[in-house]
Image (cartoon, rainbow over all chains, first blue to last red; front, side, top):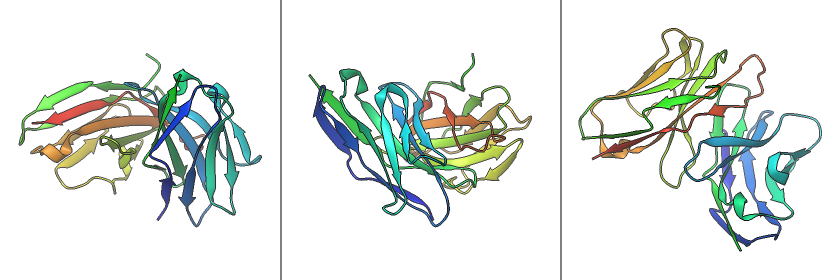
Length: 112
Length: 115
């Protein structure tokens, strides 16, 4: 069975600092990988996705993620965060079989 | 609107009551998904429809939960004999399965509170 592990439940960081949110997945087949963001009192929004091709994927709001097949990881990064990036971030895996499996989420808290 | 619409946005009910949650997907999206999100957790898969049929209902926790999509568009999630442990945000999402990218478009959820 597939699974997703987000290694940090909470990540506090100061504004303009870099951040990395870690995600590892387990799957025996090819997968598509996603990061979704959930701002307070809002629905989930797609941040970026990896389907194939270049392992470095760029998303909205300056975020990027790197697919590493050998380490089964898909870590999310941003070189300089803003207060407005404060939100819950979810990593997810899709196995082309029909459904997304989500991780437990990482709460990013950006402080001034 | 152009997005996934869920009603009601909030529902408070008493233990033992019956509840229906509605989802109106993006027009033209053939796949529809239901997830449940408890406080501090990631979304947990419940069921997904391809057209009118349930393609995968392996996430439904027990037979108190049931979902329908009779005309391949709007879906209703039905919960019988609600329990306090059913309290959560129920998320609906839709996708264009023809693209097969797995990208889901989510509604804002229906928050269910069982007293």
